Length: 190
Length: 190
DNA sequence: TAATCAAGTTGAACTTGTTCAACTTTTTTT
DNA sequence: AAAAAAAGTTGAACAAGTTCAACTTGATTA
Image (cartoon, rainbow over all chains, first blue to last red; front, side, top):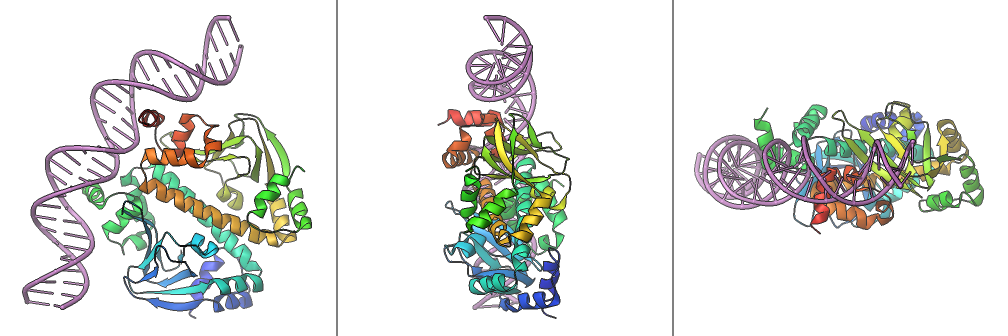
């Protein structure tokens, strides 16, 4: 079934009944996005929470100096949104762009709110998923402080080989917070 | 009343009835911690979620090279815990140390679980608080990538003057991810 | 299949931040 | 109040990472 991947993802966090998971999935709508297309652009309001079924996305921001900084990448089985913009309906600082032809499941704000009301356990689900996300962000911050660019590069390609294989070095560099020229020099010193 | 601060903090995220907020507060136990004492040490399991009533804490980790890295500081009105260790009952990577004589409200795992069952809206509350935390961590990571140490220093003391005033420069440096010698040099070039 | 554009490489000069060691100042302990 | 410990400062040498420019290689597109 089309929603198997979403259900499996959810079940990493919580056990749902068949009815609950079917009902939950019913709020998500499939969308196909072409390579290079944007699901969200900086300045606009994020109207969805998304889950990737196929393809690859880059979530990045462009700062006032014009530098691109990649917050994260999302491939199959990853979630994708600007939480702040979605929660508070304010202009996003983020761009979400497809790096290849992709397929996502999207839920809009109204349906998300209906979902929370009709499936009480969904609050627990998203609470747990959010807490896991906090842990991941904290860890990444610490790695950024304690490790050199070279160590972070190797950590990234070792930990996320599936993602790394889809990316250009320029994209990886913008995720690591270094210039692509320096990444090129790092790779030479293997 | 003694729990006013906690209730006010919660009401930034969600509206509770008087009964709900009283019941919620009843699960938290007050604890006094002396300056320099540890509420959690690296390697042990985090048995609480905490909320600071008075004083100041530093949440930090020591990496394999022996460097201290400060994840965050918590003063009055901030939450404090190792989520990963608390959720999954696994050894913590974090130390939580009081920087002055302090007072906290603590809830243990058993009571937290009772709380979730007895006050259903608590799931929503902690879901929303967690999502806000994710936003904060994402922003901090981007600042770390896009800003120089000097810019990050000024951002920190401008944004959190109450916290900064309680800290030594060495502690601030370990939060910024730089050496205290370099922070000293930054301050000279004002 | 050419032409174009984006990605990747390299080097030289530069900036940012580290390390280590010596010293001064402030805080804590006795 | 003295002694000890911790925090902060400074300088010199160094390492990590950036910038810019020129070039090569690889992908797209017409």
